[in-house]
Amino acid sequence: MTRDASQHSPAQPIPLKVYRSRERLTVAAPMAGLEPTDISVEITSDDRLILRGNLRATLKGENEVLLDEWSIGGYSREFRLPCPIDGRMGNLTYGNGVLVAAFPITSQTQPGRLTLDVIGEARGEHAGNQGHPVRAMSNLEHRSQVHPGAPVEQLRPRTKSGEPNREKVAPTATSDP
Image (tube, rainbow, N blue to C red; front, side):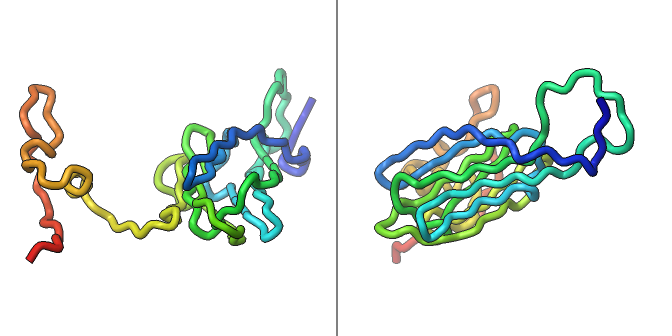
């Protein structure tokens, strides 16, 4: 059996795991062997989620395939949403061949088309903030917001010997006068 880049197989269906909390709908889908730029997520106004993973290329030239039990992409799945979501504010992550999409639940579906930004080798994300404003901050800044009033020494990550890590900390803005 031989295969080259001009022979395209039809898109493979994608199995899904779908979770819902009070505020968020999360969908996980295995899409092995793709780069983040090959993946798109679309939410339509008629309450459908469409996942696509484009096939980059198959084996180039003439190759004798001795065993072919799985293939990389293309992937496609259309799914009727169980509740309305905001498709513009979704968060996407892709790592270890799994796409995870999380969307805020709303009273009416807002359509959107999302793609991943490359953040590392075969890793990607799209931060839609799930409806909450976000700003970049250090781990220490984040800990100080999660644990307000805690002494800085308690917030610092620990070294292997148990001593506080002495990383430099950027000052944080506070609302206190």
